[in-house]
Length: 286
Ligand SMILES: N[C@@H](CCC(=O)N[C@@H](CS)C(=O)NCC(=O)O)C(=O)O
Image (cartoon, rainbow, N blue to C red; front, side, top):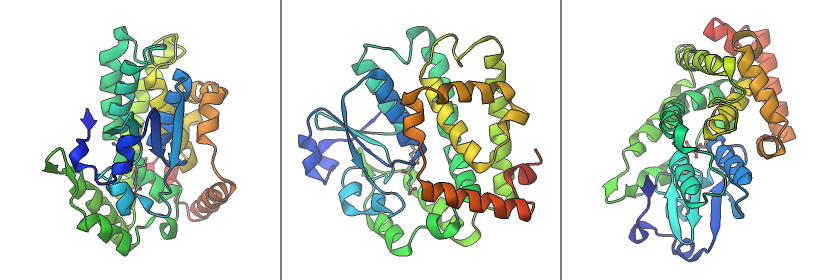
């Protein structure tokens, strides 16, 4: 669990925030997952929007809270927590009214969320290749250098995540997301969705008859992959039905609404990909 030590938090104001606060970005998958969780639990929380498209995550105010430079960040009564899955474990434990990680499913859910977390860069790669055009997604060199120049100290050590983040954005600036990388990412998802499809053969939700955190997490990835053109109805029809069912719930639907401008951009991208035979299905051989 990643809770930051107060001495390393440079943006001191957050140490005085009372109650539950979430620094998040509307279109970020990990933020959406956390917001749905908060809604379902009925937790009273205060949103603090941070604009990733403006690269506000590399500005000193935010790096002074989370040196990792990623959203979401939870501040609860002045304590700062990062890493969405750790945040959700903490919240489920602290606000135990409605358990979204039931004791009987705990190990299964944690294993599933580790897998989800491991696929995060694959999700990012497919987003950058099929949903967002480079001119919107690329980091401005001056913004990235703010991150490079910051100390990135977490719990006394240089954050090991730092090099992974820098490497992703440097490679993306030069090569974009190559066909090979996109193919690999899509195939990684295919393998996991095959297993989710099996889980849904006998159950309404991924762990049985009730919604758990595992449903929230995979709902969010599925939502994003739909935007990238992943053909769920063809490849994993039970997943498609499960997703459509969850989308009927306002706690889910309200958090994944996409702005009209992003919808138009993503549609234009997909039209171009269709014309040039370079959709996700083409690249992944689906
Ligand atoms: N493992 C992290 C991943 C967080 C993450 O990568 N967040 C993305 C948004 S979903 C972000 O902040 N990206 C920063 C950027 O795009 O520069 C978590 O679960 O919190």
